[in-house]
Image (tube, rainbow, N blue to C red; front, side, top):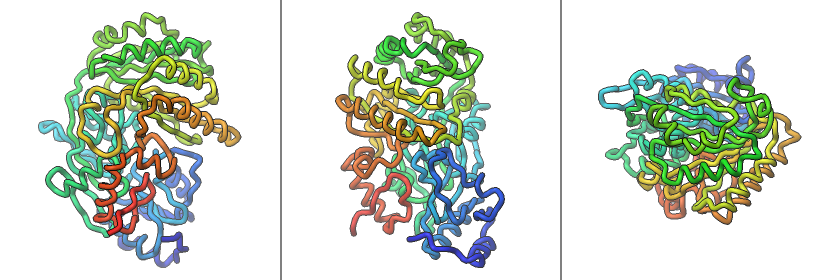
Length: 461
């Protein structure tokens, strides 16, 4: 398909069959509606179909196909590669479909395909219920979950997709299908990691978990103490209880009350400890880190939903992210990790994370999209303002990957990266899984209509 120029009359015809709103470049709010998290993505769709329900999704899909328009699907807008936009094409924007229904007795929740994690978590928090979601509140539930779903409480409750019970989907040919363990089980398997390839999710149902108490410790040191803190953190997480999560990261010291002046605006080393339990238990677990005398700290009980909103990455920056999974983390790997922090743009909103997996992630089912045995993920997130820094940030992120390659497991969590080529896509899914995904793709999207996310090409029939 191509970006054929549309006649106004055809757009008007779509509007007559549409409950939501069709936005074009001539509308005053087009730029706001088009805007996504990564300011480097400048794609300008001809139409943004802000869908109110599944019928709108079908109408937009049929219109795009009859007019030979490329299609993108948007639930949140956090794809670093800009998979939720398409130049000259049509965006199926599900964000207005954000209803959340909690069944507290069954401990389940059903959400619309455009729900954000902030909306999800705020709805479940009053019941003392939660499930693993994104690390920020503005990420779309559908995009993160169908790509796997790593988050702060994954070591206790598994990935977001591990808690997925059912998905309603509009397929490329306009069918409404349900995928779960009983209905379309092959498709349900595929949606756990490769979901952006198979259709538009209009509704998702999740298992929830009791989480009456939750606490965090956010600790900061000068960057020159980073290597010693990283060693303490690695050893602490080696046999950590499943209740403990979080990560170590380098960042620019933020202008917050708990941050001392000598760290504000300067490269700092931080540790976030999340804990599915109360503050005293967290303090006992984090004692080795507290003994290292952090220069700035917040240690508190906090509602889980509040944490999810507390660390939101600011929108409107230029973004480049990548990821490398490690099968081990010896001293040499830690030294290289810490040394590379000095190549970051500072000050900036960039973060350079070392994330522990394990716990419930290790024991989850063998879905496509990730190697559950991976104990560590190194995740550089470049967020910066000046286009003159583009080459520097991209080189930094790629050099991080090169530094970590001697200890790499070879796989990758695809939600953490942009477009890094077909080989990385196959590495993310695994070769055997990719072949099976290609077979399922041929059943549900033989023409590869949904091709904007890390693409699985349909197998030849």
